[in-house]
Image (cartoon, rainbow, N blue to C red; front, side):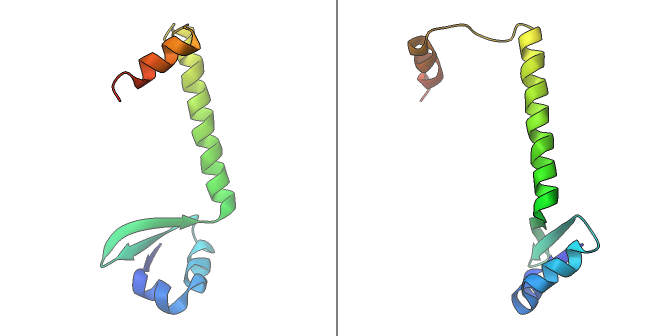
Length: 84
């Protein structure tokens, strides 16, 4: 479902509410190009939870595969700031 920036300007939040009643997300277009996505908080929280679960699974896989470094705090700071 798409909402033009002009429609959003004239109808406000009611344009978003109307679209989200029929779909989980609404795309806001600006000059005909898709620019933003809006969703209700329930959908946002669901996607955020999925993102966090994926990060946790990646961290577990890295640990199991030995892709980690054990070092002191000082050595860690030197390593992560080396290219800054």
